[in-house]
Length: 400
Image (cartoon, rainbow, N blue to C red; front, side, top):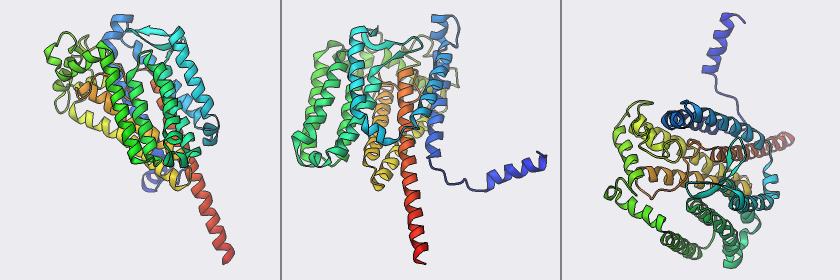
């Protein structure tokens, strides 16, 4: 190809609008941007612990890169599955999640006193991540099948899904994993509210849910300690408040524009879990307020995309896709709020990852699958809209 032809093609690429696509390209770029940010921040935050544990600084970077490859490969496969298949096999998927939660209690790998992982060689599978997505898929199908009952009766509309959630919650609390239970509960409430459940019943259930969470916190001394240390971490900065005080120091050192990529001090064995649960604190220290705002804008752009896709699905009468898109949006938004809030001292510490950014194979793969399902929902809505438009044009042509 001649130089003149190359220049002409580049000029055309910049000056002409992109052709109509049957998928949301902005959602793809937002997701890839978050994944790339995660790879960079995990690489930076894991240097010290990687050198200390393995003798070479890029161990966790290579593992996270492998997780990214697995996540993108899995998402590419999931993208080919029609929504009707997810609806058809939603109960089987929920059953598989319950089975995995039982397996992890029997033969799971214990880390820091919590048995949450099933060793698979290349990475440790965390069934709680699979359970989140499977519950939301099952609930979307349930709300499609029982929409009238949800809006009319308490037993048929509320009690049955709460019973399913309760089964998962009991298994998760045995691990223990209260954070995942709370994420599931909030997302479930959001989906029921969108489905048109009666406000009085909804509010009553919210009160019961909050009471149950408070009861679970009071039932375990370590959870009470987390809450009290969150309220005043400086009371015991070298004990129960250690992790939060180190995280707050990272935020304070970040200032407006940060210390520069790779220049975090807190990751040097001061801040525990710097590349997993508290990667956002390292991000705040190295990239500053500006970096924090940009990353949060990316995440909540993804959440808004999920909401818009859900609305489009409802407008196209794709109710299963609509409920599922809203469920994924609520899930990503709330989990981000909890992770960032814990790092910033706004909420008690919870072992929840930052969507598409934190280190962890199970979380990254499952959330990538969730994004690919969003793309599939949008794709099917666009195809349906295109077909309807073609039919309208055909009718107009026949009349003429």
